Structure formats: C-alpha cells, structure tokens
Image (cartoon, rainbow, N blue to C red; front, side, top):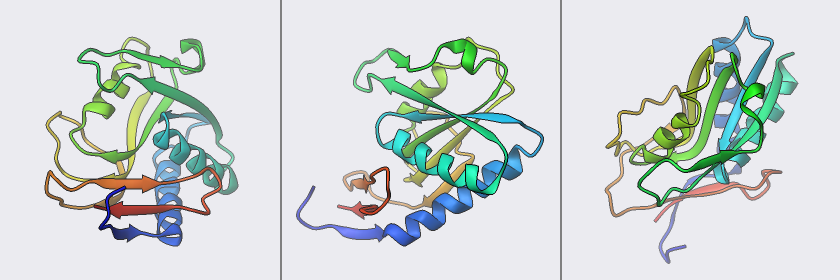
Length: 169
C-alpha cells in the first residue's frame, strides 16, 4: 500500500453498504427461489460471501456461491469457475467485484455467462470509480466516487469482516 492513504470506508460503513445491496438484490428477485452469487476471485468473492450471509439472514432465497477466476492481464477472455454450467443455467446470476475502474474485469466476468441461458444478470461493486472504458453498467453499488486516474482504491476485506476498510491512495 502507498504511504499516504485516505480512509474512505471503515468496517461499519462497509457493512452498511453490504446490507443495503443485499436488500436491493432481494427486492430485485422477490419471485426467485434461487440466485447465483458469482464472485470474481478474490476480493469480489469475499464480498459475495458477505452478501450471501446477509441474504440468508433476511430471506428464504437459496444463494449458491460461484467463484470466477479471470486472467485479468490477458487480452482475451480466459476464465474458469468452480461449478459446472448446469448449476447456473436458467438462473439469476449476480456478478460481484470489489472495485469498478475501467470495466474490463466485469466485462470479462460477464463473458463467462454469455453462452449459457440465464434469467438475468446483474452486477454488484462495492466502489465504482467512474473511469469506464468498457460499456458496463453497475446495478448495485456501495459507493460511487470520482477519482483521478493515478489514484488507487484499495479494498481490504476478509471473510469475517473484522478488518474491512477502503482506502484511496
């Protein structure tokens, strides 16, 4: 991490954002019995686990976790998942990542699901930096903020949530 950091969100604020997003996901899927939370490894997956916890506390939705591994530095879509396509076929998919910067990661994440029929796909990010160069829209956002390109948003998140924080450096 850089020497000078500005705390943007602390543990409590992050949990408030996660709770709000979980309720928005629930409202968007009131008629569903199951949704797929597809977390982009690794911080997106950690965020998805936290969303799963809240969703199971506030609803009767079956929430199936899906880990999406992307080779982000590759110029072509190279991805793998920890579940077979049959597990997410014809279901609602919610793609989760920590920070949206250019949109490339979410675009590649969406590419994983394009050849399989689904009911709908939604996107979740904790922080949207508003620097998109890919035509990506976020459906559920914790915090939208304008930054300059040379600034970096660093999300620190563990599964339990004790050390959660978001910094701008």
